[in-house]
Image 1 (cartoon, rainbow, N blue to C red):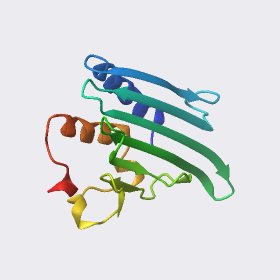
Image 2: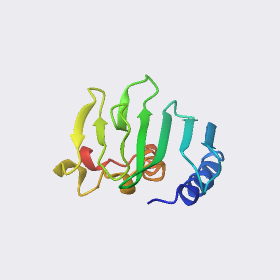
Image 3: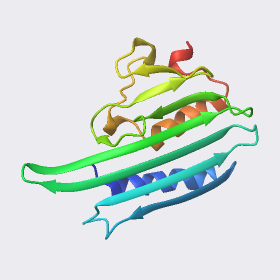
Length: 154
C-alpha cells in the first residue's frame, strides 16, 4: 500500500516551490486520526499562474479493512485550464472512488477528448494510481508553461 504520509510530504515540498512563481492556495492534507491509522485523507489545491492559466486539484483517499484485507480507494481530479477557462488537460476518476492501483483517464484539449490508460497517444505514460497524481500532473503543467508540447499533442 502506498505511504500517503511520504507522498504528501513530497507534494507539499513541490507546492512550496510553486509558491515562488504563482499564487497558490490549498487545503490539506486533512488526515482522519493520524498518518499511521488514517481512514480518510483529503487534499485540494489551486495554482494561478501569471499567464492566466489555472491548475486545480483534488484527492480523496479512503482506507478500510475487510475480511480479505485492507482496501484503499482514491477519487481525484487535476485540471489545467487556459486563461479563458478552456481545458488543456484534466485527469480524473469520473467522480468515482476507485481502487488506488486502478487506472484513471485524461481529458485533453478544449473538447476534452478522453484518453484511457494504454492509449498510444500517451506515449507510454501509465494512468494507474501509483503512477499518477499531483507530482506528475504539475510537471505536465510546467511543461505547458514552458511552451513544450505534451505527449498527446505531438
